[in-house]
Image (cartoon, rainbow, N blue to C red; front, side, top):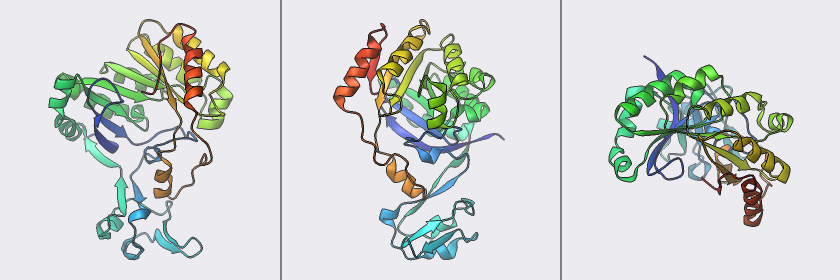
Length: 303
């Protein structure tokens, strides 16, 4: 039986489509954006998180680990996890009375996952909301996502997906047939800069955006990262690209960079590359919005 790997399920979301929504966050993403606020979703396998603010340093997790992946680092004066050895078995989670260790990533069948989102059906009906699948990259598990969305549509749930559009069209197209709305992140119009900051070129992403706009209502999202993609030239080029997408294109959303996900890197024993970067000012965001609006498209700040 086919299963999908889910990082987490967020209920009562208000920023991932119309109305009150349940956001299903898939695990696994081929991009490595320097600013990523959801590093939990990058690896396509379950991972152990270490919440240090709740850790008493008792060492029970060290004793419990069958792979000897958990140890005390004298130089850092803290417990660390060797990610190369950790299998995500969860033994260290069950032994921790402080709940300082959690598992990110659980396998669901489509029916099991539908059973979770169906719990919120009353909120969808009353608010005009529904289910949004995000990530990570949902189309990395395209067959599972299609099966899950087909169940949602069979119960008349409004459906949406947040995607990088980095995968093949053969993976993306079947999923689109089950969607009422698509959000696609567009990081940068320049291929070289896109690859430098995300690890992949943008050529396939741009092609998939054009093809998606031919078949599904589309909202483009641009995370505004200072020094990377917040130049007037890039914003204007992005807006011009969006304008030619046709009637299915709804709007461009400019999402200001934030640092809300920094603690997640520590929980994964990873360094955050942009710790010294400051979010863009409100004045700068407004100026960029007006640049994009100058070509005649709908532009909003935030989702």
